[in-house]
Length: 255
Image (cartoon, rainbow, N blue to C red; front, side):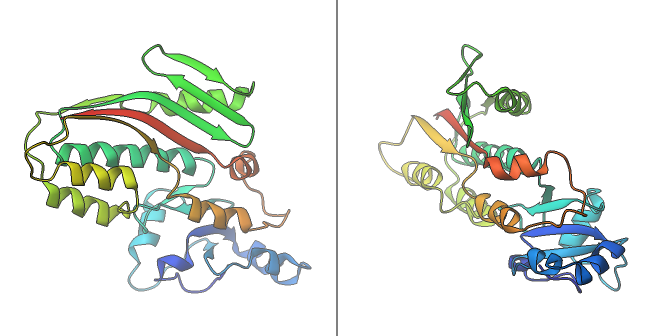
């Protein structure tokens, strides 16, 4: 984890820890504190901020979102490398973002309807499932916290999107995936290929979409950092980082 000038290289700031100046100074003389924070993909942002000259877009986004508060651990979005979320909400926020991008992809490909059939949340403690049609929650482990998180996730989602429908704009769909780094998702690539010009185009598909795979790289950086005990983070921080939230959707798309 580096300090000094804000990194222009996004790979050097997958995680950002906001620390007060005196905490940074304390890391320098507390035994092992500086070493525990060191990571090539993380950055320490000093509070209060004293930006000089032109402010980079990523730092401006952090400031505008009110995230530059002491003790915040920020996680880089896998879909926009200049956007960050606080670590305790990052798994859910990034999952919601991917769901939005998937629905947008379907819109570009001429879909008439995108319907969420089932939502799953898997952590190290177990798996919780929401059957959207029946609005039933089930769990492979009696984990109240995970069930509550799945309900919160469900409350923020659009479970059904309707469009006019029409010809596929493959170019717009491909640009979306390149811009968001989602070209590696096999479900999204396959939808594009099956909606290209042809005599027997896809009319409907039900698929399982992993909403968490892209975010794991940045979240793993956070998990590697051993924050000194004198740095006060959110009470939820350690639990969320260790639980490794994995959201999946069962979705039906009709063209």
